Length: 468
Image 1 (cartoon, rainbow, N blue to C red):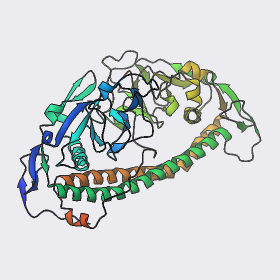
Image 2: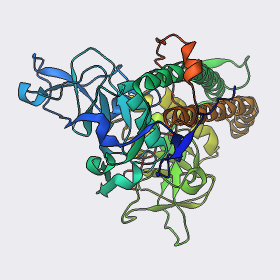
Image 3: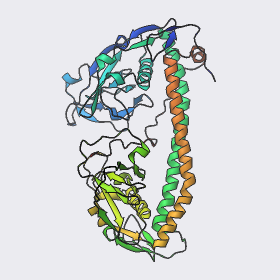
Image 4: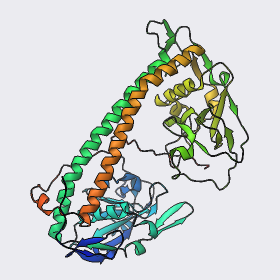
């Protein structure tokens, strides 16, 4: 359905805004903000009345424009520190420090809860003036972010982006009358609800397809392809039974750890959590922390088995499709026995899926472990005959290709829906389209979609390389 435009427009004088409805008012962003108060981190919780929810940027559900509430953090915040910082329903919270190359600093979400909470020191509490709906302001801030208006107000030091709020809040915006704000919000709530419901269904489909794929892989790499083969106990809990003619050997009897020199023309190879090991530029060129000095970098050859020591628990194991150089945190392995590296990449990923690597390894940072080659070398792994390893890989390539295509199609559809949603919000809050008549037919309240527990298929490895 095409949306109509307003009868008359005027130049806004602002490049990202373009023309706006003739009667909308141009104002600086700061004019709609009654208060901007820095957040607080406080001290470790003491299980007393001073403990309070402290909302962090990691709690932002930016796609929905609200907070996630599944894993809230409590901190001890003194009464004096709480003064002026207690969030009220309808407040906005803006990220002022953090960000990165993939997602710049400056995201804003709405606090729409009744429980007592403050926001962390990397954020500010924003109280919106009475003449502007906080829900409209939240969508306006989303548009400022999607249009990259925040970028020119970012100052970066030591890898952390800081948003100059004083400068940012001087940006000019267009503000419609209050009844029109209500109509725009009502229309967008309904329209984005439909989009989010479709996205949620597609994410559930992706999760189901991934489960189906993993079940096929797990059965093939631990049970083989012959359903009538006699079985025996492997002696390893996460593996269970294996075909009777298979052997069990330690990792160090199958692979050696290499330490190859690097050549000047080598590009960086990255091991991703989905099992792909490829030149970084093949996946993306931004979102990584670059090393000032490539100390300890090593060569990797096409066909090497690569184990990411800190992210192997999450599936960062695979066979390199390229020659290049990589971080010393990787174990670059080549066979010393007649084994097929791709088969063992799947075996180790299955070990990770069963939480075996996480149980074995000592974590050195949040959401990581330390699974070094020495630890891998002690693990007992199944050893099918070489021809059978090859047959298993051929079988899995055939069986999972259609699943992978279905997953990629769903991801592309989600991306298109999210782009449409972003564009729709921007068009409505800047007056590019007139939704007033459509909004009249809609009720005010829309059930919120909580999709924080739906699997997020985005690539979250922007900071996986501590050395890079």
